[in-house]
Image (cartoon, rainbow, N blue to C red):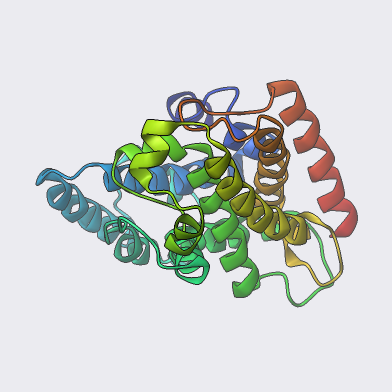
Length: 280
């Protein structure tokens, strides 16, 4: 399966990932597509509470073993296999993190941050290793686990906000209970009452928290290894811009998904890739 075929199957022209991978050479884009596709396949099982979930995870365990043995069968793992260093991605380890069902709630910010980080850190670590040879750098700290964890947490927290209504309807409340109690609101209140001042107040807290994290990750500096990671940098930059649009819309995000235009994503992706090369 070519990069174009996999891209046509997994991406649409308006998705953030489409623009994040757009400027990668085929040698990098195809396995990177595979990494994100595998993460999406496994993450989607979170919403499936039927008995077939165990069967599907068992099959993916077998497929990951075949990937390690050099005999993958699925187009996604075949794409990942194009990356010679795919063994360093510890793909089987992803299953352990994603196989644990999402909890219905989180006690506080620390617990939510930890869960968000664990869900996506293996993906971002693999993506960073895959693309690090694209950007020449004199730094010895091009791969930083703490930055991977922070980037992964930001990526997942953003997804929780952008698809908040969907998560709530599946019984997953990606808002710390400490924030809900201060309102006070419950998940049921949010779904039934909609856009209330209390809800907007809670979402402003989530916005401030995520905006601060994204700002720290997106601002280029010698101490920030994200600056040498083109895909991660582009994703976070687009998410940062989209997050601001959510705030401008007064967090009207329960029944709709707010996004920015493809033209704006194109501009952000181009600008971010240029910065990554300059700071590499």
